[in-house]
Image 1 (cartoon, rainbow, N blue to C red):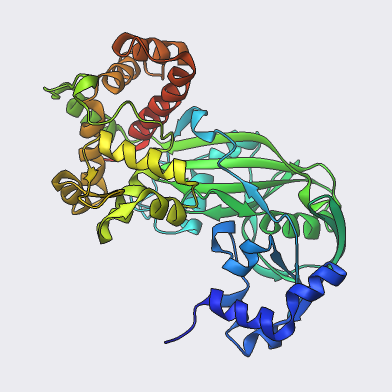
Image 2 (cartoon, helix red, strand yellow):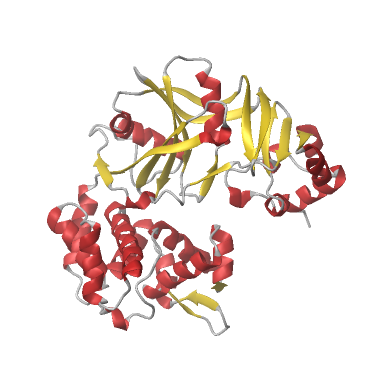
Length: 423
C-alpha cells in the first residue's frame, strides 16, 4: 500500500532529524531533490489551507515555505489568514449583469477559478469594487525576484530571504491608479496561506510605482466574494489586514421569478415546536450543504464532520443540527452517530439547480425564514437585524437575547444563500 503524504513527511522528519534541528536553530532547509526521493515535491509541499498540513506539521505548529528554485524552509511560522473570523456572510450582496452580447459564458456553469475571474471582470465587479476600469495584464506561473521579510513564530520574529521562488498569480488587473493581484478559489475555505498574496505583492511592489491591492477571491455557490487586503508593513509577512469585503452575484431574472413562484406556492409552514431540533446556529449555508454531502458515504459523528471540514467538534454538532432541523439528517441507532434521512438521500440525487430548489423549500417551510424572505420579496432588500430578532422573539419568546443574536445571523446567512442560489 502506498504511503500518504502525511506518512511520507513523517519519514522525512525522521530521516533528517528535522524536529531536533528546528529546536536548535529555529528552522530547517530542505531541497526539492531531497523531497523527490519520497515523492514529487509539487505534491508534497503545496498546502493552500491549514487543514491540508500533514499531522506532523500540525502537531508541532510548523509550516513550510518555498524560498528558492528547488529549496524550502520549515519552521514554526504563522502562515495562514483565517476567513472564518471575517463574518463575511453579513455583508450585503450586490447584483451585477454580464454584457448582453456575451454568449460564450454560461453563468450557471462556472467550472473553474479562471472562469469565475473572467465573469467578475466582465460584469464590472472589479470596477465597482476598486472604482476604476481595470485591464488584465498579469496571469500565470512565474518566479519571484529577491527580497527579505520577517515572519512570526509565536512571539519570535524570523528573517527569511526569498530568491527565485515559484509563485502563481490567478489574475492581475491594472488601472490608472492601482494594480489588483488576485488569488482565486472556487469554494469558501476556513483560511488560506498568506504566501499566495505576499510573494506576488513583494515581487510587483519592487517593479511598479502604482498602488498594489492584494485580493483573496472566492466563487462560492453563485456568490463572488472579494476579500480586499493590505500589508501594513512591506517587510512583515504577518502584517496582512482586511480592509473591505465585497460580495456580488449575477442578476438572473428567470431564477428570481421562479423563486418567487416557489415561495407563493408554499402551503405548509411549520411551527417551531414541531421541529426535531431548535432554531439552528450555522451561519454558512454553503457549509450546511458541504456537511450534507459528507453523509453520502454513510453515517457520521460530529467529530468526524468537524475533522473533515476543519471545524471544532462543537461546530460539527451545530451543522449536523442544522441538517436535522431541515429533516435531512436523523440520529442513527449507534450512539452519537447520524445518517441521511430519505429526504436527504433524495436531495443528493438532484443536479445543482434541483437540489437548490428543494433546499429552498425545506428552509422556507419554517416560519422565521418564511417571514424574513417575505420581507425581502416585498421590499427588495434584506431586513435589518432588529427585524430578524423580532421575528425570532415572535415565535420563541423565551429565547435568551444572546442566543437571539446568534440565531439572527444564521437566518440572515441562509436567506442570503437563497437570494443567490440558482434554480
